[in-house]
Length: 475
Image 1 (tube, rainbow, N blue to C red):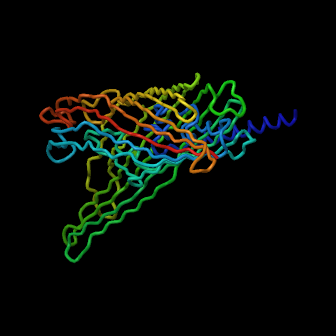
Image 2 (spheres, one colour):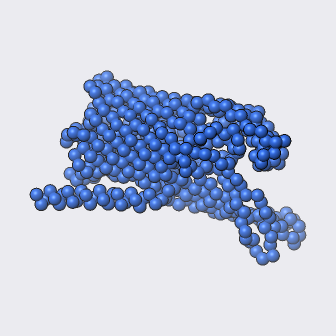
Image 3 (cartoon, rainbow, N blue to C red):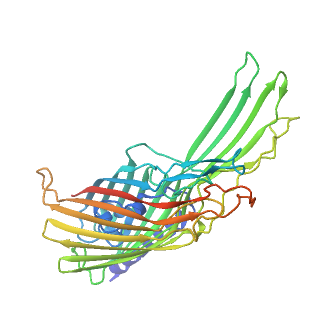
């Protein structure tokens, strides 16, 4: 009896440490946006509409639900590797105002760049049971590494038509760390950690127009590692020891809001005439490069005969969204004595109303045999904009339907070695609902004799084709 009480106290202490640690993680809000929300990690999760909160995902549990790391019946070491790909194709935007007196010098009409980079990279997953006899304590790692470039960042332009959630949200590395622990039979708890960054820089420019002289420029920047946390629960009623994926599972994951920021102070001076210095241009630029909302994900899966059904609902708190447009602010201090600051007009990012959204996901898989599994999935993501951008600004985010299909192959060996393995293949099609944008009269200041950026109007929408293939090895 005494040994049981000590064991229960030890379990409680570990869980309490996890909860306290998670509270500390919530204090940092800067992180990378994630591929998992856009496509899902691994072929199985993508094929099920991105619903991965309720169980096994082929080595990628550390992201989808770290509590699943400690699932019963799992091998001690699982390695996952895969390739993900997505190609966006948005409707062309031609014959609209691309600049006017509000943002530049004079009005220009033309086309807007609607070609966005493909998402193409490899995903890595790992889970390892460190202490199988101590609550199945398991560590996990999930990473996304782009293959077309190491990282791509683009703030976009504040007033030009922009599909702001697709420009560069999946164009940089992503690393997730997780720990899973079995609290009670059938009940598991997990905590996760996003690794992240904040970019800070400084620039100084001196332009010299005098003969026999040079201009100079210096720039320094630093990436600061930051973290953001999330936790998960996984409950399997009536779970039996040694059983793998249970007939009935309930999952819950909470992710903290995350924003990766950019700060760039800049000082520019010039020598225009012999002995005469022009005023200083001193300003700071700031932007939220990437943003992910606080999200609550809940779901369940149940198995009937050879069929498993998965349902998940994500509640995403987009109301606090920070746009990535770069904004300028004027400094109030000159560089040296007897110097004047050249005044500049500060940047103003258009104001939008962002709303929280509910994203439903459903999936179905049919075990045709012990080695073949068919999968289908669907999800729907509403727009985070309360209204379409008919007024000032042109941020675009049409509602999106996503349909997936996939196939799973199970093997008892891998390349002749007695290592159970699984190959999951998925295809994904995302359709953005068509929208018609008709700009209201006048420019951004209300001058009815001029036109806004984006006038007279255009159609928004498009599609995204994607796919994934992943391999999981169990040791």
